[in-house]
Length: 344
Picture 1 (cartoon, one colour):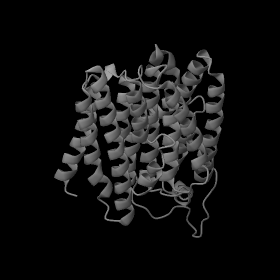
Picture 2 (cartoon, one colour):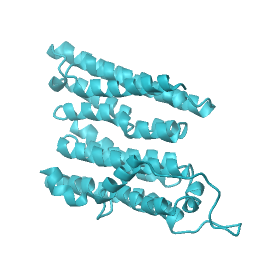
Picture 3 (tube, one colour):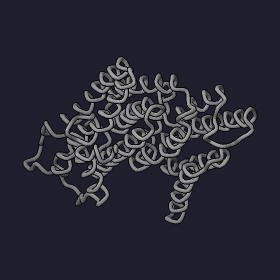
């Protein structure tokens, strides 16, 4: 793909998301989502491989269906209320449809099955875009319509997503699928808090994007696509693999790392709202996710790969972590002390 084409697609990707995030009219928000989807399609399919084509087809079909549902729900709402304003979504049927459509766009359970397959058919950088940037537009719509969305559906999909994200990742050996199930679990946490405290939703989304970016850039730098690759990554960059241990523990939500902050705030809010059983279920589901993060850390940093040659270092090109990775790693590990400042 030529640099000009890549630049045009990335510009369209950014423009589509920005258009959705800044619009107050349903049609403009829908157009933004469509531009966003159409821009990512060539990026996923640029690898001329059957897996990439399959991933592109699955992504297009699910996103097109979700967009159609969003358009249908907004039209239904406009028909009954006479307004296309995003904040005036008052028709109960329309809000239920919208909640379902946004859950499908994000990859929340039980509409999550496309996400691991699409990530597995994409390159690491494309998978990073899908799990981070592509979540911004649907999440901004959830934020704008939080007062009108169905709390029951969001809470149920949130609980189900956190459980499915934990269970699904247990038997995976591909790092991209592991990150997909990690994404599903994190999105479940965001869905549960969306209708109660939208500000915590934004904080959780930002920390999730930081942690996921750090992990994907680590995987890209060490060229690790499977657990076996992760086991051999120590000889490529010992420092980076040591830091990846902390990044994985932050994704698991262990104190005193950044990942603990959103989980702590969400559990506190759920308890204050007398949803203790839900908070308990969410906390227990985190243990499932933590298991496969710990398995990844064990394989990566706590075991030495078998060395068949006299040297402990394999031949490699110079791997220098980018400045972005340096920045995101710092924020992934050390933001917990700023919790009072970020939540005030």
